[in-house]
Image 1 (cartoon, one colour):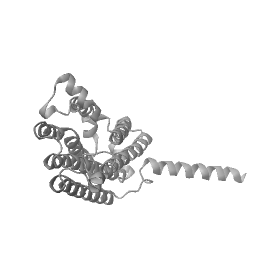
Image 2 (image 1 turned 60 degrees about the horizontal axis):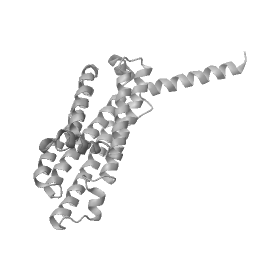
Image 3 (image 1 turned 90 degrees about the vertical axis):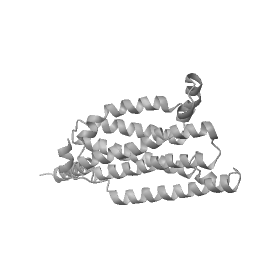
Image 4 (image 1 turned 30 degrees about the horizontal axis):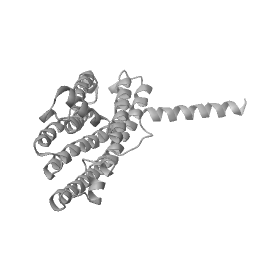
Length: 253
């Protein structure tokens, strides 16, 4: 028999096994605990640097920005905290794409939900880099006359969007393995709580006292801390899901 037949068969077998490994999550071999520790450590260091820079700027330097504040001010864009949040969102997007491919390979009925999550995280990462959502605040405030707790008017359309997505994903969250479902819910609460709901006391304070003071920046730092911690926890959740065996993932289908 022609040796090429055996060569072809072996090659097909190798490709098949490789594809199975990808779909079972074995190629992406991140340690969930290591991912969580590194993400949380980076978050803590950035928050400490942000607090220190804001204290120096507003309590010691009469509001004059310093190099430290330009690098670590959590209320500014295009600096280290922004880059880190962008990285977390992009990493989540990458892992969600891998999970989508895995679940599609397993013919899971929930695979499109993972794909839609990946798309949303891609949009969020782009928004983090370009700060598009903040451009809606003034038009909404002007049109609706929002003040105080709703000073940052973009949270109104964002609130409707998040509520709609939340209702759409209830069955999906319930379908997840118990620990993954709990962690997904908690990470979502942390992230949305920071990104959306912390904007309300932030707006109320800014309405009365303005934005160029230390207290306002503390509220902003709390907001960003919730966001980064939520993303760090979700990274852990996704890597934990990918580290599950093919047997556990087949039960999830």
